[in-house]
Amino acid sequence: MKLETCAYSGYKIHPGHGKRVIRSDGKVQIFLSAKCQKGSGLKRNPRDVPWTVLYRRKHKKGIHADEGQQKKRVKRTVHATSRPVADMTVEALLAQRNQKPEFRKQQREAAIKAAKEAVRAKKEETKRKAVKLTKAAQQPKVKTSKQPKAPKAQVAVKR
Image: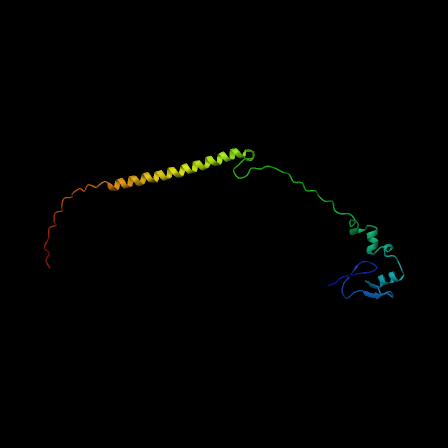
């Protein structure tokens, strides 16, 4: 649905309304009503006719009052705040940020060394357990002789 605008009043013209006038120079003018057409024919300036859009714009009436000026833009400011992250406090975060690379390297090497020691200790523990099991398996088990059970007395059953 295409809306046209009136050549005189500036109002919107919906389909099926208004009148098209073609001037002798070939310009097409669309008028909303006979009132608009008559005002244009009498060569009245639409800026001087109080009910037209042009008049209302010129004299800053209604919604046209604030058309010329833009809304004030609100400047958004970013406030940088430091907050604790996860389990670390702000002081701990700052301390970690200010560490020297050499100190970090030493910490990393110490952690690697501790992890390797833990793995080595675990291996040794498993070896000790394996040795104990093999020694236990090698020792011959002394069998204790059991006394033979006395045979059960057979009782004759009558049939």
